[in-house]
Amino acid sequence: MFITFEGIDGSGKSTQARRLVEHLRATGAIAHLTREPGGSPGAEDIRRLLVEGDPGRWSAETEILLFTAARRDHLERLIKPALAKGQIVVSDRFADSTRVYQGATRGDLRALVDDLHAQMIGVEPDLTLIIDMDPDAALSRGLARKSGEDRFEEFGASFQHTLREGFLALAKSAPDRCRVIDGNRSVDAVAQEVLVCVDRARAHV
Image: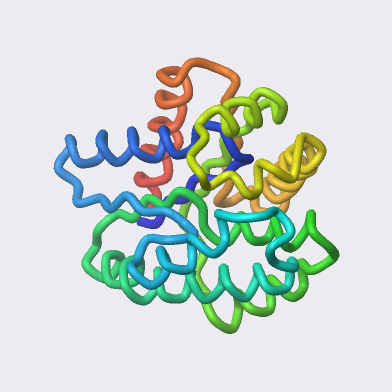
């Protein structure tokens, strides 16, 4: 099973992805925790180009190409081999982030994103969990981390509000696999709802 977490920066999805994998492993499942951009050595190299540096470092078109290259390597090296063995892959972001970040918010490039995805990736998650959170609170949390990977946070609050709208619209467009979870609650409350959604999805795989 392939499960992805999506949401705006600082929404808590990374924490929830980690907790889910810990739970799955505790039940005896073989589960991989991964992330995008990244997840494989080559993709991690590309990650540094994307998430560090000046916000205007790349055009949206260049970002799309870099993300697609990283995703292809991730797919070949980790995702497909694990799924072929019947294992579970939990990824902190996947193609939906590119659809929203580059395809919808940085120009009218969704058609380009979808075309590249169809040609080079061709895989959709079984379940996508979108952690929805107040953009202003999420931005404050994200910037407070001072991770050095805050290029997208530095686009500002209006960008984060636009991202949130993009993720909610995406959830409506793909109701069979997307579940929106209220992230404005305690970590434990969010984690409990995540488990409910995952258990339901696993029962139908």
